[in-house]
Image 1 (tube, rainbow, N blue to C red):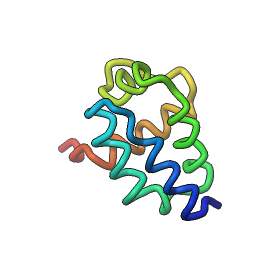
Image 2: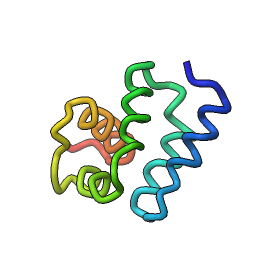
Image 3: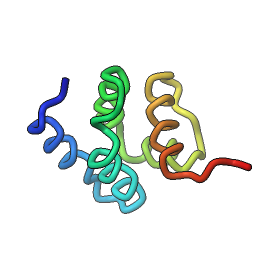
Length: 86
């Protein structure tokens, strides 16, 4: 279980300096992180350890991550901000 202190640290780590990542990560930590399953919370922490260039191509859907855990959390983040396909 992540404490409030942990979540504050994650919020700080979510500020990547690349606008496209910041607008996805910071609100995700503030609004959705606590509601995730513990395994998905761990996946998000793992995602934050990745390089910005990798994060960018995955979150802009130019490539898929080879790691299924990373791909799952990327999909969770994107599903949260993208309208459902009709």
